Image 1 (tube, rainbow, N blue to C red):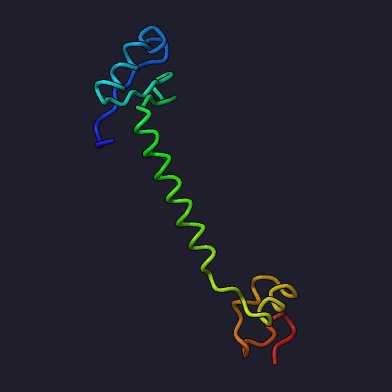
Image 2 (image 1 turned 180 degrees about the vertical axis):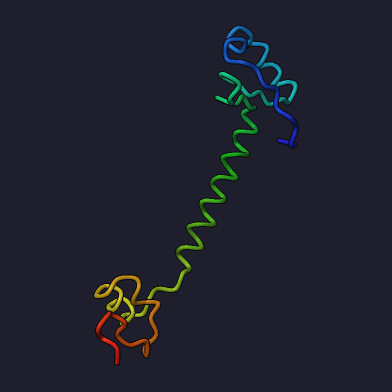
Length: 105
C-alpha cells in the first residue's frame, strides 16, 4: 500500500479478465477498482495489503476503546442531577436560577 494509483475496470470487463487482474494484484503490486456505471464497486488488493488494512482498523478500534475507558466518570451527585433533569442540567451553573417563563426573580 504505497499510495499507488488504482487501476479501474468495469465489472463486465473484470469478469472476463479476472485471472489477469489477480496476477496484476499479486505479482504486480497493483490495486484494482472494479466499477459499475463508472462508480467504484469493489477493490482487489493483495492478501498482505488486506492484513495491513485490518491491522490499522484494529489499532484504531483499540485507541477508541482506550480513550473511552479513560474518560472520568461523573460524580454521584452529578449523575443524580443528570438522571433527574437530563443532560442539560450538566451545563447549568449553580447560580443560573430558574429561567422558565414567569419565574423571573
